Image (cartoon, rainbow, N blue to C red; front, side, top):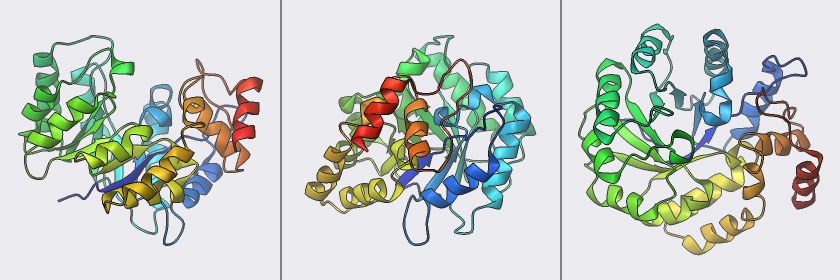
Length: 289
């Protein structure tokens, strides 16, 4: 069974000044997030933070292949395949080369605003078609719909749905999932600032944006929480309180790419319709760093 305990990092996709994928910077990012003996526990490729919606199918495959080829520690790789066109998601599952991938992260359908029954039907079709286990991704701020706890729990009964990345921000909903989840189903925080309280109520870890820039510190925080040392975990968490809002002020991954630029890991370029961090945001991030 795939172990998704600990810290997963939702990897950014570095770009150069021409808007092309910057593979040398991606190599630095992979080393930065998992140096020998420290860092994150697994990589998440082509999630929201990776700007997946602006990459072509060819580019997505190139990024995935590069990550697989630069993984000396053999970290689990979770790959994002989701969308609001169920047929297209099934086709992408069929035609993507997924050798070396551990699981699929699949976002709840956006824009269409399906009913809970429609969401269940969508994910059931995806799980039935996938050769790899499915991690649900609930992020209502982006999808305009919420996987209710009872919906997640119904889907958790599917043998090929193994976890949910919960970014609803609703701790009561998360507790309901943790309370009633079947054995082997993993609750993962999708919100960096709720990682510690969610672990306290049953989550097994987090898929993080900040871990791109602060992999060791964020992973230490998660490990402290998983060991029950919430005093030390909270101390680290509170250190992120001021910078975290700046990661989203001009939309993710604008803020974290600016931090990575200051850390000389990659440039701060993003693809339209996003823009690099404004001068004001750059200065405030720099001051906090």
